[in-house]
Length: 549
Ligand code: NAP
Image 1 (cartoon, rainbow, N blue to C red):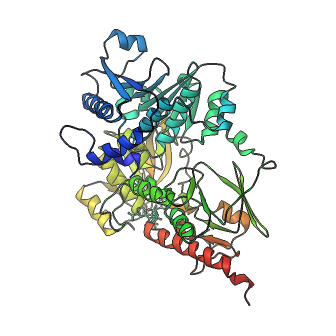
Image 2 (tube, rainbow, N blue to C red):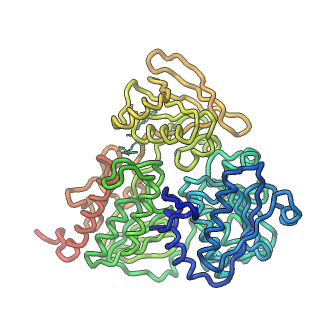
Image 3 (spheres, protein in one colour):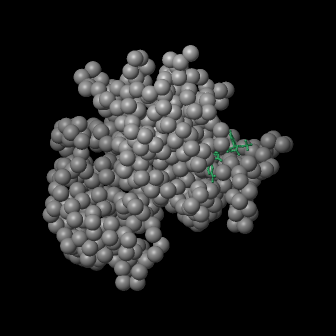
């Protein structure tokens, strides 16, 4: 069980907020604490009362577990609050005499992960930044205030918050880090036009980062207050010492993680490289209901369990992006960090969101246009949103948004859904309105925020407008085939990699599995393909089919 699971259990005992199993795991975790960690928590009965109670009960639980955690509670209207510059409830400060690290809003859901990480790093008095990041941050000589806007179900948010906290620990006098729950801090979110999370605002708007960044890029942008994407891409491999492994697996969704487990269990040395975070598309699915053994499970939770299992066998490197694969006598895999020398490669690079390709879609991305209902849904509680699409993703997203309290309408270009019957029935039961036979032709906004969708009925060309605060685009996926194209694998007309029954591609020693191969694109099929690819790689190494006549 992962740290994040600890916050998701519904089994809560009376005198404790955290269930017994979670307390046991946290106690074990806290045994590694070195120095005391002290919190100051500020509350006001007039602001977010439910979340205040949660925050205080949560801290009380933690202080009873570790022995090294303590806290003091203050009123928001107090001299202490004024001294610390706290003006929102609840706010939790971590070792405020040493650092400026604050959680504004209760650390619920995914944010529990960054909260526990903050405790551990502060307790060790170590930033945990990589050597490269520390080198970049060493150049900082001006103050930086870092506000990371998050939501409880956003799987990308903890990564960004943790980077901010690490910088605040590394440069205590200069960097302050604030994790802001968007839903509990609406006025602040409005001030910074938050339409998607994570959104990182540096120095009250001097620089913004949309989404989760690899740690080094985060640090580079924090220092320079400029886009550092190109800087990060210019990695020089010439001095790298190549790491030797039998198998490199590219992508850490269900297919890649399964391939890792099977490869290591077969006796191969393997590494799984993931340019973002583990979990692939599933991590962004609000709820999965067709994975056997789990009648209903949040996608992120399922992937946490899967990745914990995989990590028992195989090294999984997040935020490591493969830039080039050179196929020779050995295979060289060049990433933005290092070079691997291997015998085989499995591509499990999945799929990427398909865009509508209409005016306003890019312009308002992160400011009302979203491709991730799991991440951004919370922001639209009580507001009007549209979901575009008629497949499983669109309906899963619409149901999730309705559950969060958004006023949802589905817009679909035909008069029937292609989604599974169970989802269609749920949509009908919830009486979620559908605009049939209609396409969105333009996303319009004002002051940088979406306000209106321009619609066209495909049957009679009649045009209309719909006032919305946000639009979730769920019109399918396109294969993530950039690497496959680069090395020249055979693909079908849709850009999916062609494989045989053993998941072998057109180039010997290169295999593919999961959504990148097209087909049914389900978690269970990705898992099956991952296991087959790993076993084929293993068998082909000892008995190369391409050398047999
Ligand atoms: P999908 O099944 O390809 O559906 C895409 C939907 O978007 C279709 O309804 C399509 O309309 C519509 N669409 C495509 N391009 C459009 C455009 N330019 N403008 C307007 N509408 C457009 O994609 P998905 O729902 O993302 O699912 C992808 C894969 O993941 C599927 O294999 C799915 O089964 C799987 N998945 C499964 C679950 C689950 O099992 N619970 C959940 C999520 C995803 P038409 O119908 O007219 O083509």
